[in-house]
Length: 375
Image (cartoon, rainbow, N blue to C red; front, side, top):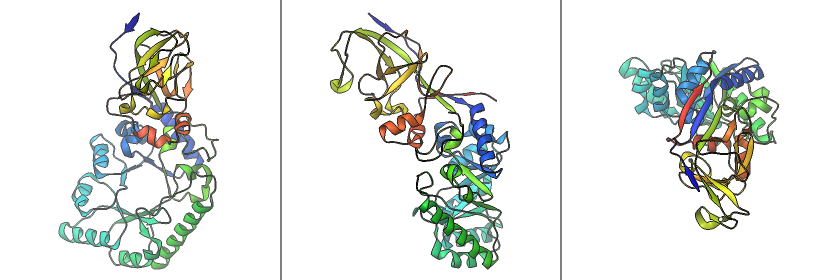
């Protein structure tokens, strides 16, 4: 017999009280330094505007985004705090940065000249932070170029350079050697700035990994993303901070079918029923961010019990072996996160498939309904 039901697809239930709990733990951990909440990529799939507004309600006044468009979306959603745009500076950003009060990231003397020209033409320019490349070898002013840059900045008083920062490459790894090297490089850059007569209101280097294992990297501001959302950046960092998962990712069982032992299930026929059982169809797939590669070891939780994924995850749905389960069409299963009866940590999945929580969170697709609870 086949039992089926039409249900909506996956849901991301965002527990804002857990978000605030995590923020308060982090705030204490960083010795009450100011925290920049990193809300780029839709707050790592959690919903940038509701997340930012919840954090703003408890005192967070800095937010990190990647693009000006992400910053504008926060402003349009009612976020009033400072917003730093991480992406590479482009002079085309300047009018929008002024209109929406966005702080830009600069990394070269050419950027300074663009700001100077904009100020000459308009009488104003947006605030900026200068990013230093201390070893990530991505965006940033090379350390060997800082002296020349700082001298030019000193001679360009109309540029509002309020902050300076860099980014760790290995702070979430067990060996702190390279992260400490980057910290030393950054401290040397700050000394050069001081010698030239420059000071910065906002100085930041620390990220989620270094919050946990490198307290000497806390300056005036600490950037935190993944920890806020209740996940650890790697298995090599201390996990003594009792953070809570913020996202509860669920999907409905939409079909149940009894099958005989030996029945092949899903693409490729790589899974066959080891015994007579009930196969359930869960309405979520890799197009929604559920990882295709987790089918071999993957499981879901229903009413506090774990059940194995049966066969390959498809684009829009996957199948589960509900052997001896108390299940009916319409039941919601837990994919990852925490509910009243169980928890499946996103780290459990990411470690199993050789990925990271960053990848899994940001893969949450547009068909997923976000529901915000708490506060």
